[in-house]
Image (cartoon, rainbow over all chains, first blue to last red; front, side, top):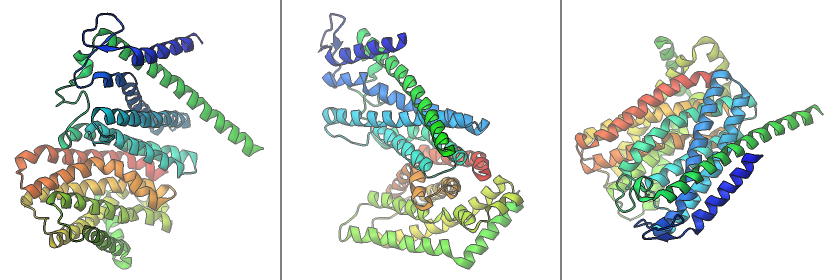
Length: 234
Length: 221
């Protein structure tokens, strides 16, 4: 219970601080953020957009990991865990895409411009979508678990390619891209101490939230299956 | 294993020659797809870079219309259990893969010939680079679509699911191949296209390895 209160306070603090703390040229007090040329007020999205994108990737890896475990042990429990992770991953993927697109409207002038990161997250969205489409088309539990595990392994091996080929094909606009000159690797040196602190607090808070949600999702799927079996038995 | 996969391939090849299902479907699909492009282009002049992209659009959708046959036909005829009895999973996959590779090569060669005949902007300046990317791209396309076809054949809603599942997997290959085709159209040397060629080669190798390892799980299902 105590950690739930802690999580609530942490996320409340991060939300308030991330939105309300002013951005000034020369920060003098602890609640002021530095001005990053080229980003200005838009920089504040880092406290909410980056954690969602990070959790998209975490959920994808977790889902693949449990798929791999399922293929090795053939334990249906692993498949449920993988499914719960993918469900959250899909939610966070949509959130990251939408917040990124809204941000891009103000920072780059258009909602979508096929920046490497945008293309990568679009590919991830497609993979998640295809994965759920595959799952919903199979009735039998074991078959569904095996085939979707195989598919997530195949999708997983294509991921490195996106990392290598995207920057070659498209020029990067996203802060932190290799050829980004004005808003450089933001995380490394443009943020001052308190901005970094709030950013990492937000990352930690969102990660705890994710694992909590994942646990609830996992247990709710188990309960639903139990109820379904009771209904069938009558 | 090799001779068995070869006889499996021969079996598919002979049954294909008798029914001509895949060949007819693919040929008609190529014609339909290219004529849709021609009608939509109308009298507009299209640039070489656009033809390079459209070339791979036609290849992708043609592949999606015909390549799932390899496994779906076994499930429909109810012969997959017999195959499971007489051959190891990797043998089956190898046999089906050879068949699909040949199908992809025939289909894409026809598309390439038709393309260069119909579109004036589609002039390949560096033929050897085009050939290299064409061969490597075809192998990658065949490998990925064969393993997805195996998954599809075990699931319901086979026809609609196939392009949905294949697209994210094929996306890195298609993006790189479009890039390589553009290079070939611009007459860029091998030296400058080295990185893209390396990407396609590693895609082929990784996909081949992954699908041989994962096919066991699908096939035993």
